[in-house]
Figure 1 (tube, rainbow, N blue to C red):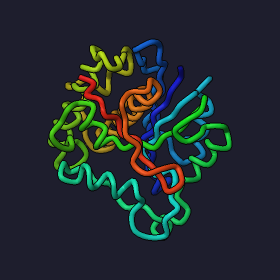
Figure 2 (figure 1 turned 90 degrees about the vertical axis):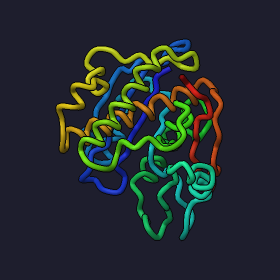
Figure 3 (figure 1 turned 30 degrees about the horizontal axis):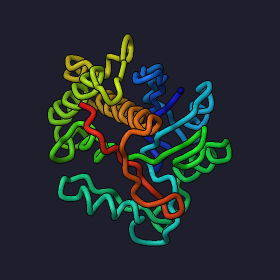
Figure 4 (figure 1 turned 45 degrees about the horizontal axis):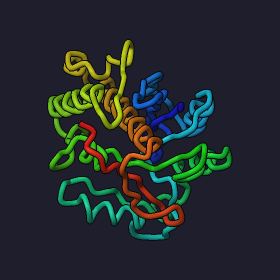
Length: 241
């Protein structure tokens, strides 16, 4: 099974999205591609359609926004469950985002046969922060996105180490070799800053999304917050280590 994970820059076309692709065979997900510099929704769509035999994709961005104000039901649900662990959601509605690029991308995928949460070809909305809490058995959100440069580096190294340890996971093994090991290398992370550090963060997020897609495809334990009418987020519920 060919899968993809997308860390989507959906609020501005000036920011890059990151896409990771992989092949799931038996209980091993092998990373086959990482691109952390995809600009614009059309290029994201082109990249996904270029992945031969793609069957499933997990996207970190709101794919369905139908509420005119307030939060989506799924966002409120995530806040109630994970807010005390510092992993609440940002608010999405049509007033704030009347023409969300993420909704456009999701609709294009839907037109291509990628159904929400089901089907031979599928798409799901994911959210790395609570997923990381569940997958790695953490007490609260892993802080690798904000703070000083050195704090970001340390957070990325912790996440990279978790991803490396997934190679031995009984739930779903993650195989990352060759050129794709660079983003997980502690010495490399220590050596970068600025946009390079942000690009590495995006690449790590894309791999997390890819792994979430792998868990969903093999029917691992998970919880759907919300629904495909009002918007939803799928969160894995398995400690993968």
